Length: 342
Image (tube, rainbow, N blue to C red; front, side, top):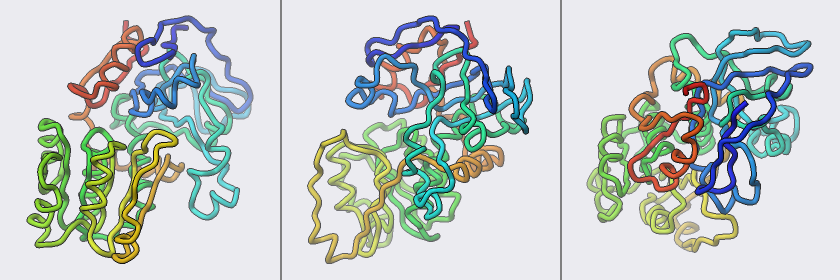
């Protein structure tokens, strides 16, 4: 089978690997849609794993079922996720499935940028779901990133009727806008340096948008009746955006860091002001099976619209081009790889 083998953002090669076989409890999936995630192009993280077939935002059809599998049959349309928790350890039982050790060890074989994918038994049991007939394969490829957004907002325990600021309106930010709006926030503001992304943020539910080079705290006070944001959701690891987040949170509010800086990078924190103003800091990573189920429901019910977010649909041979588009982040939002398209 053909795969797109990652060596670096500038070096993604079309190569051949044997088609995996489904063992006991496993599934073989014919990949139909695989989204390029922003984490796929983090070279400081990915190059140490190379060469490797990446891709974890995937949907497809079951082509083979291993012994002992129930609930799935050849021809089923499915969506699956690469990292799954054990559902039984201390972290899972305390609501932190994303930091379960198994979550950090589970992977696909080989990865979503391939014609076929073997799903290990643990992924079949905890991270694979039937794709509703109302959803296309392309729409289903958003289940994993949307699940991460659902978990993040749940983890922040954001009550209704808050003033919310979303910093950075790439894919993650635009999904955060839609989920926050669906939860009934009072005032929803989004920022970015890209005017087209700000237009999309308004069309998808933001009450106000502000160019990131403007005086964001001042514009925020204008939009929120003199107050800052009760919840600031940071969807970029850029240093100016992080500084802006600290300046934009209301007393008693929360900062939700959804994006990460590179490993080892230290960020100055105004700890005195945060202590004095009782500002909370929350981080979120990944999605649990429950979050993924919620994401399926949000997409199937039309609460979250992802059709406007897809800017490029490429063949497997064009995966390298897709990596460049996402890494440069200029004229692209979501890039979908379609391994079965010639």
